[in-house]
Length: 382
Ligand code: UDP
Ligand code: GLC
Image (cartoon, rainbow, N blue to C red; front, side, top):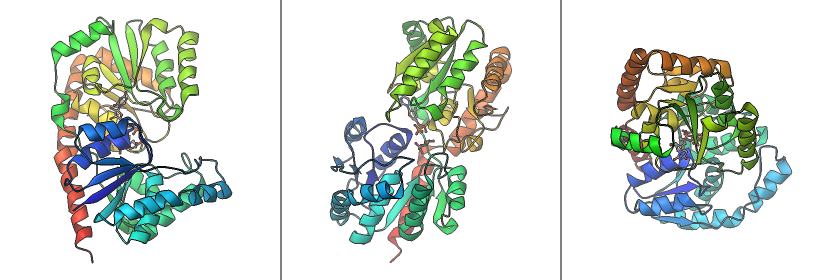
């Protein structure tokens, strides 16, 4: 089956990294269309996936955009919709990987008479979206999507609660290749030396810098840990959150944590960096739709602390495969860090159990098989 994948951004967020894996498992006749150029295009090309950037003249609409602004943005999208529909005719199916890609793809699917799959990677709630946007997305999903693939039960539930058709949605967890996360003591040692943290207890936080990802909570928690505990922040402000990035720098100064915090910016060597850490903290303050970083930490055999909300609850069983803390609660996070530091034996057995679970539940082969099966049912639907 030849699939035209659609994604609205050229940046490398989790949704895009997931599509990078998925698109490689498809036939050579499939390709990816992006509404914006960026490093995502380069990574797809390197992986041998056909990709093109479709010019985007859409007026940006934000969470607070009113109906009028939303309509204007919709009309300005016509050239984009026309380009998608024209291309769609050479494919069997459209596959939208992000919200905006789905809305425009849905209209294009009506024009080109091609089915559209919506891979839903966002929690559709007013925490993230205006009520108008919520209604628009669910309206299009109910009418146009052949199937909605949710990346977690949390995402599925929010879709149904927002008015989405429960019959259309199916949960498929993101899969990973365990070989990407193999242990390497030598590279761990070298990296730790390069980062100047050889004799420290290193907590890694791997997320784009954004207020809802809660980097500020880890800084607050760090203040109450021993001086030998340091935090590495791996990730950049991908979607214009520069103000938050400077707030974090300021917070480091105010808390006097200058020598215990490193901001590494966006890195492509996440697996190696996770090896260099002693624990990994996920700190999102609003429910995480899935949270790739949590599973990556499990595959990396590192103790992982995550916030107890959204998809994270489905990934981690507290005290069995990791630690869960209350979102936004720095004190809770400090406690979890202490418990990892104090009992290496318990930590180690949790880490082993987490690896085994990740292998069972989040293997790339199983994800690709499930998605291929879903697409086969579409192919056979007249
Ligand atoms: N990541 C990366 N480089 C960085 C920071 C993060 O490659 O500098 C990766 C991280 O390993 C994970 C993804 O970006 O695979 C983020 O996905 P997640 O689902 O955790 O969050 P999202 O950004 O999609 O909300
Ligand atoms: C989105 C979500 C993230 C999820 C990723 C992959 O970017 O924010 O939680 O892991 O998609 O499905």
